[in-house]
Image 1 (tube, one colour):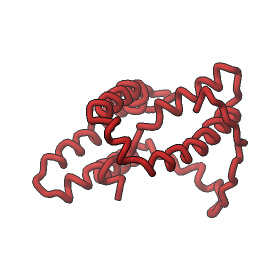
Image 2 (tube, one colour):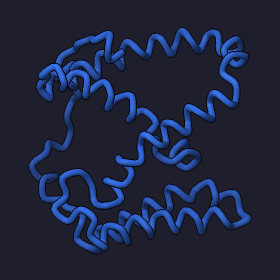
Image 3 (cartoon, helix red, strand yellow):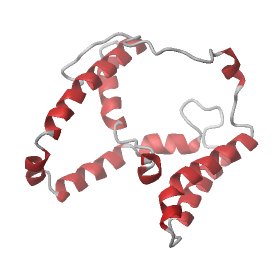
Length: 172
């Protein structure tokens, strides 16, 4: 469904990164950062639910100029994340290596080519087809590692608030 229509979203990253850096600047541990991020996200969900009840009134205030500006600023703030992912990912030993860039170029190229076809099904499926092709090529290049999967349980139950639950007004 939505994966084919919108692709994966990085829209939340700028807010999450800002909130995480606030906690980190105060000397927070990775667990405290996660607890704050989960706590703030949990509370923000109720704000979103409340705003959804008056979306018609908000449309008068949030015009296309406002939404366009916000989307543009979000995109600009995510350039560093996107370039790091394209180059091979944070902490990669081969960051910026040609195979990483070629793999990213292949995925982007497939999306562009499929969006040029006249058939709606190909345009709507461009992202999932490109991601699947990219995954298969990455697997053939030896970039996919299943070694740790053997150590994981076949089924696990999520543990709510495993990292705790914290709230920070500055991060909110």
